[in-house]
Length: 287
Image 1 (tube, rainbow, N blue to C red):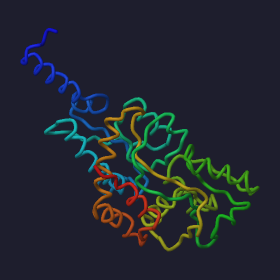
Image 2 (tube, helix red, strand yellow):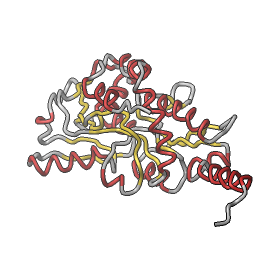
Image 3 (tube, rainbow, N blue to C red):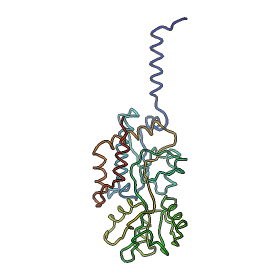
Image 4 (cartoon, rainbow, N blue to C red):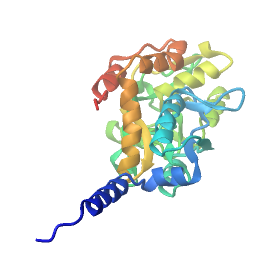
């Protein structure tokens, strides 16, 4: 049998190694353009919002800045521009990920199987539940007190779907007032045009503490849904998703993730719950 020269064999090995390391998908686009595009929700504190200076801020934004550092390294870039794209409604966020308007969505998106038909999700970043905010002068202390109430809820959210299902299953007669932003929900509630405003408990806390009179509100003592949050990415891009998951897991293996939590939730008097602690512990995947 004829043997290939050693030099030719070495050349073939180097070529195959380079090909194996060739960037694809989202990482290739980032490497080619030098830009990493982050989608975020501009009015969902403390997850993601615009601060007083007009800059993106929040718990999820902080996580994604660490992800951006990992993406820059994986793309082999010395300099990388990070752009933030505001996206409000869930459908806008899903579409922006699908069509490449953003590389990742770092807002407050709940993982669902129907959404996974369209996008991929990272390791979980948070777990919360749907709750209802009301005014102290006409409180809704529990989910069981929703009968004959009018509740504002953002169109297309998991909160919207869950409340509708909750009403049907439990035969509770309450009215849903469909809105498009957290700000509108607070406006209607404060004006007495709705009895309550429903969204994830984590977002309710942020809305309350950004208001002028945080002490004038009541949050239901119980929740009506289970809301696991994660970062959304284009479906099927496993190389990019691995970079994102690796960045998150590296944070979960250290005390830094708990400092980030306390920066954004501890300031509102919200202690680290056992279930969120479990998210960090169980997803601290080793290399």
